[in-house]
Length: 128
Image 1 (cartoon, helix red, strand yellow):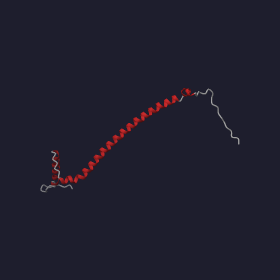
Image 2 (cartoon, helix red, strand yellow):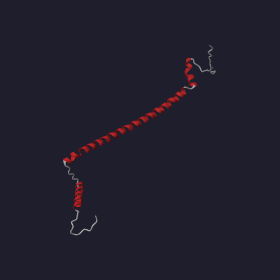
Image 3 (tube, rainbow, N blue to C red):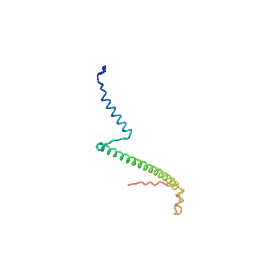
Image 4 (tube, one colour):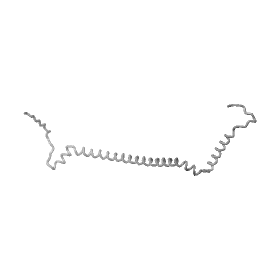
């Protein structure tokens, strides 16, 4: 409500002054690092502190676990690269050894020789 205040009326500024005073006292204590904590206040805050401690432990565990997973993924990627290069080298070696000329060379000591004529098709007729 807006109204004109007469000089003889007391101002209702007393509650605001006490709030301001409490705030300034609190700021002053905090700036001087004067934490007057009572044991009852600590006991009241104990569940919250336990909750924060649990969150801290979970955060550390999660960080370590994710780092371990990342290292394992890197190791597996390197192993895949190595296996792929080994596969390619083995495949090229197999392709070289499975050529007709190299097979003929390897079977020469056993008396098996390369055919000079193409193979013929054998057909069978069942006449019953």
